[in-house]
Amino acid sequence: MQIHNSVTVSGLLHHIRSEKKDDKYFLFSVKQETPWNDGTTRKDFLISRAFLPEIQEQVKTLPEGTPLKVSGSLHSSKGSGDIYIYALEIEKVTV
Figure 1 (tube, one colour):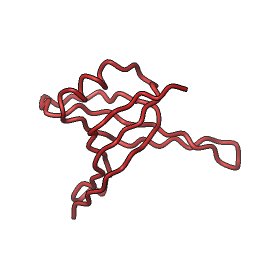
Figure 2 (cartoon, helix red, strand yellow; figure 1 turned 90 degrees about the vertical axis):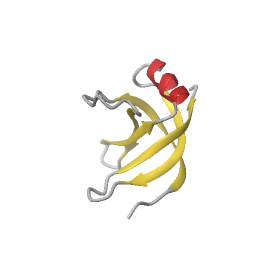
Figure 3 (spheres, rainbow, N blue to C red; figure 1 turned 120 degrees about the vertical axis):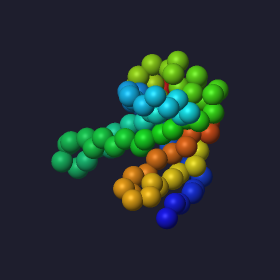
Figure 4 (cartoon, rainbow, N blue to C red; figure 1 turned 45 degrees about the horizontal axis):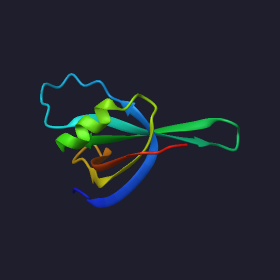
């Protein structure tokens, strides 16, 4: 079953190197760091796919670790249960 939801997430840009020859989307992830009570930091990565050419170019030009906000449609894959976002809008966040 595929689930579709509109979401906005923020975090740090993480480029994913892909060996796929199929270039219909650009693969990247949004890294979120959450401090825990024991002093450690939990690092989560939300895999993102940019299909729109203008979004692909925007993400490709941003350096690794850029703070950003990604809005799009949340999907879950059939079988594996992986969750990823189809990026429809990218906003660079200034800190």
